[in-house]
Amino acid sequence: MESKLAVTGECFCGGIKYQVNGRLRDARSCHCSRCRKAFSSQASAYALVESQDFQWLAGESLLTSYVGKHGFGIQFCSQCGSTLCGVLNGVIHGVTLGCLNSDPKIELGKHIYVGSKASWETIPDGVPQFQEGSP
Image 1 (cartoon, rainbow, N blue to C red):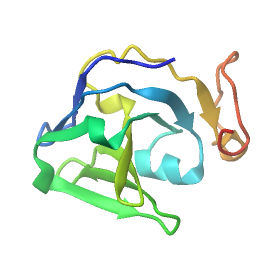
Image 2: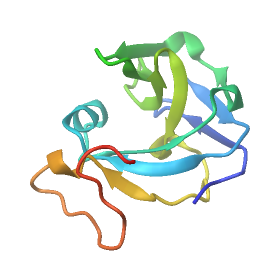
Image 3: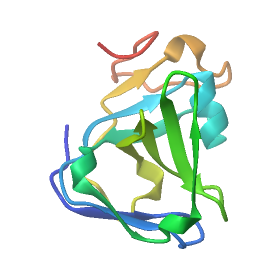
């Protein structure tokens, strides 16, 4: 399922704000150990975006980035620590669903990297699960 609405988002402290002027697509929850650490949670929930549809509205100077050895990374607020978006080779490719300001009209369509999920987590029935990334 995908969203075609323009949506805004912001970090916990409100210092950074952004807008997506296109569709959110391919919403998923990633259960890999890196996402658990980056989000301080059992998984990450995010949707893919086209980089040209994404724009920072305020607080871009507060952004901090972390990029791993495979080119995947995150951008987060240096003040409050909210993870806002995912980057691949320096280009924004996804936004975290938890930082959106309104209902994006999208549902998680899959759970990925469930082979390394936390032992204490239970994934709901009925949603596709992939041991590694999705096809």
